[in-house]
Amino acid sequence: MHRILVFLACLICPSVLRAEAPPNVVLIISDDQGWRDYSFMGHPAIQTPHLDQLASESLVYTRGYVPDSLCRPSLASILTGQFPHRHGITGNDPVLTPELAKLPRGTAQKTSEYAQLRTLYSESIDEFPKLPGVLHDHLGFVSLQTGKWWERSFSAGGFSHGMSHGITGSGGRHGDEGLAIGREGLKPVEEFIAESTRNQKPFFVWYAPMLPHTPHNPPQRILDKYLSKTPHVPIAKYWAMCEWFDETVGDLLAVLEKRELTKNTIVVYVTDNGWIQNPKGGEATGFERAKRSQYDGGVRTPIMIRWPGHVEPRRDDKHLASSLDLFPTITTALGINDPTLRNSLPGINLLDGEQVAARKHVFGEIFEHDVYDIARPAASLKYRWVTDGEWKLIIPHAERVPDGVVELYHIDEDPDERKNLAASEPDRVASLREALDAWWKPE
Image 1 (cartoon, rainbow, N blue to C red):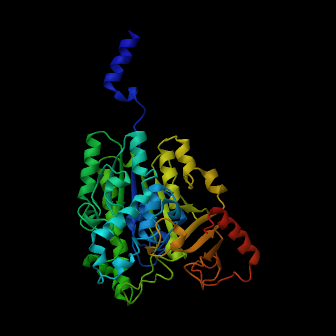
Image 2: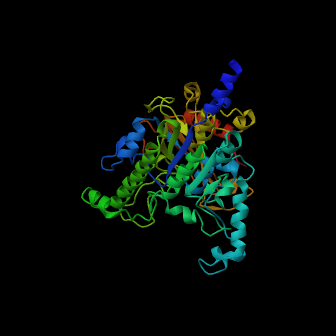
Image 3: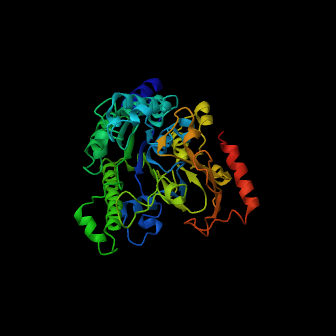
């Protein structure tokens, strides 16, 4: 009789026969956003109520970093959990061959030869496990790519579903059809979540809209809020773009709430790289201190993790975090126990307080926009940097920056990195450089 009752219970409740279904995962990645450009980070003008709410419900690391301050390498690092010099995607585009460089401006990029070069470059990530693929292989996840995406079709990143088809599909350099997400609504995300829920499949959503990235063309209703807050229209437009992105985050979180998925979904936030808006507008957008730079204006970001009932909401203004930590944090939270995978990842589990407290440094690297030698990352390297949370050391790479100087900043007291203390702190420079060289010392 007991066996019969157990059998009937299994028919009524299939979960008796299998482990509890894993939580879903939503990864939100903003595009070109300064680390202070949120109201929860203290910005005096920008309004981000939905991100503020998310922060209040999350574990927030305000001293988060990305390893590179350029879109493509940064995104590839989030996907693989590896540094750019390791996964090979160090810039946005390959350098033109001498033959292609002879063609009229803009023509070379349309040739089949250049397409082949881009494909060859993109294939450098193929040897590495990708987060969506790992979630599928271990737990049966389905996954959706939306927004920014550089590496051919979405399937090359291990996604089961996606909006971007890459240079071998419908064309496009960094996302093609996927770039509509957010700016033109969230319908593909809503439909994917509905289908996944209907099929009782755990899902992973990569939401990486081209926001607040240029073109800075926010809705007029949002822009009107900011035109009176600054005399510079380009700055008002950028601020409005940040709020527009925030609105889309609110819409995405509302989809989860509507389907009663909030409690069973891990939501993670990070930005791909920083931004400082030039008051004059145009493309000269403060890159010397922001995007593409070695400074915190380019590489710093808040990192948030929300998982109701599992992750205690709190704000950590002390300890260091990296976007490289997201891969091991998510997989560990989901219970994936793969020692080979774990040992291959340089990041830590941000939900493990002991690991976070034991971390001594976060490292990063800055490369040229274009890749000079696909097989040799150091050929494009400009700077390496390391921070211990209080101090930050920047070392130029002589091959690309022959006139560069060593820079040391006390970022606790000088967050904008304006006072170079390298000459007056030689012992600290030596100590941090030793750690930097132990991490990666390029030839």
